[in-house]
Length: 240
Image (tube, rainbow, N blue to C red):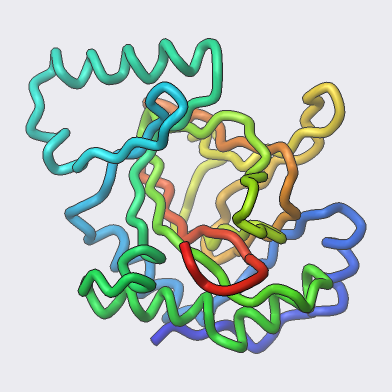
């Protein structure tokens, strides 16, 4: 089980969110829960390597990718970067926890514990209070890992029919250096950057959907991976 901290200043968080459409909440989980989640994600051997292939989300096995030769890896990077130069693209590792748990794929019980955390009444009630929207009924969830060379280009998370109210990102990497990249950037009119959030350990970022944002390129000299639990707060029935 993972537990949310009881020492959160809801009124102040709500005020900041309503004023700026985003908020970063420090010390979100109880310390042991945050540490256990980081260790669990860091120890995962099987991830998807996710990217956009001609407008369609594509996943390949990261363990299979690790077995490719250098020419094969270089070819994939060339394809990803070529598309990134002219249109929307992303490149990072993911685990679709919502799909595993919501559709009963029988994965590790600790994935179910993460699913239950973000769909608990304590989490959903807290998010409703911060966002100021009582219509939020569930949260979908995935684990992400940004290694060196990974990125997520500017987009707004608005997808017809998904009924997304806000996005959340629980940051789970201790000691992340701002110079390593992986910064969550937000943009206003004419793509002017208005705020950047460093992936601070055990802080959750919550922001309104739709809203332009990106995750900056993780540099070749980064001394670690950027782990997070992320998803969307949604209205309606839990489907997919």
